[in-house]
Image (cartoon, rainbow, N blue to C red; front, side, top):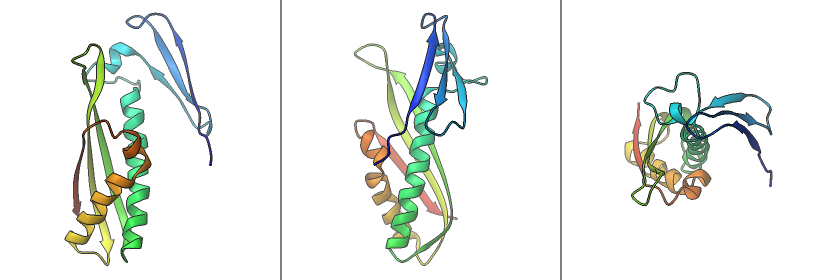
Length: 145
């Protein structure tokens, strides 16, 4: 199975420093990161581990859901998946990912709302990124358009 790699170069302290995350396997992008912007409401042109997790989760979930729709006899026409990853304080100190909210809206042929809801829930459980993040509360809001 493939291995994917990202690399971060960081300079300075947590509060004063900054870095860049490189998507090494694909080579498609390098993104700026900084802790003050990570903890701020506005990202102002930087990414964060939480945004990168949201990207990984939304894309993985979309792939898993499309496979399960087909396995259930449906045909996905379009799926719009959003993952909101929340950074919060850890009662033990520091920070933690306090929750992930998945929202999916789909146009699907061959499945009714109940069938879509079932495969959407199954995809949440079966998605490899969901499995990797199983220690975090993951919610799902799924509906047909």
